[in-house]
Image (cartoon, rainbow, N blue to C red; front, side):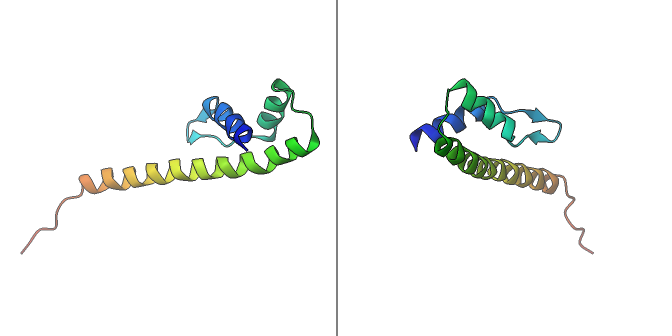
Length: 85
């Protein structure tokens, strides 16, 4: 399974980033890395097609959770304290 992680980290370093942040990997991304690495066995390709999107979803969730937390922190930083009467 180490080779799957190596493929994922290679893809992750080349990840596209749009105006809304990091983009998920496409099937084409996985196909391209299989071609570049000469991965031809259907079992290996199927494993990548299952594992890479799952790993990707975890990484993206973590990223966007951290972004959301930071945004809330920034928002709260500028809130005015309630006035007492």
